[in-house]
Amino acid sequence: MATLERRVQILFDPAQYAALEQEAADERRSVAAIIREAVDERLRRRRSNQSEALARLFARADANPVSGQIDWEAEKDSFERQIP
Image (cartoon, rainbow, N blue to C red):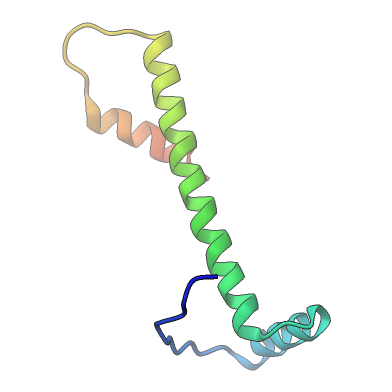
């Protein structure tokens, strides 16, 4: 595990924090570890979505070669509509 160097203050409502405490207790881990895991998962999912979008772009380009000008804003909008 990387060295922890930054401290962040996060405010939760009582129900959220109680759920975090219960999950941490069930897994015999700290609340902080549960939160770090959730952040890691979100970052991983975002990188994965970006990689998938790039793969779709290359596949579409291979399947539909174009000559001339491409409307990159329209292409970008098309891909953004496909990202969950």
